[in-house]
Length: 256
Image (cartoon, rainbow, N blue to C red):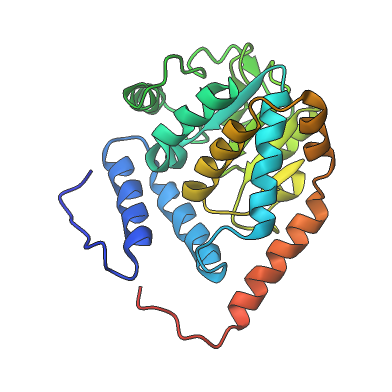
């Protein structure tokens, strides 16, 4: 993945590995330079969460799996950071839920779109949407408005990890069931989501896949009960409390 070798016993091994994946994504034209800033912001929240999946996040991940399985047409939206961090995991989630994969970028160029699509195919994706861009999300004037009409445009459930708040709000306004992965429970993205997952994407996507595989043969009535029983406001409130407790902790931070 990189010439840099990080010893596995390093106390910040997972965090450093993630940073290098983002760096490599920038070098390969997959991730934008702004993605480096977004990664650092998310890492700060994750540090306060103890770099772990909380019980509330796991419940949200189970609800997300149920919603994806219930969908008539689910789509997993992928940006540059997602492609750099969890390309194979996104493909596995798509396979477990029958969802489509679509690339959607704020800093969109034909070169980046093609590079990300090729990167996803290298990790097992058979079809990657987003290149046609023959549909639009109403109310947005930037490049994220461009979608495939038979992809996000037609979807009833959309997973939007590491999302821009305005598109999250616009998708919600379209009546789509929106699943957002965002380490900031106060972000517009998380607040707009029907199912906000406050967790690191490198843990969240595999967790949703695990739940989807466990629930694959469950009756639709059971899946519906899981989705209907998820309390988004409670989940966001619990995540915020976890982060505030982490910020007040008197434990000395590990050398980063």
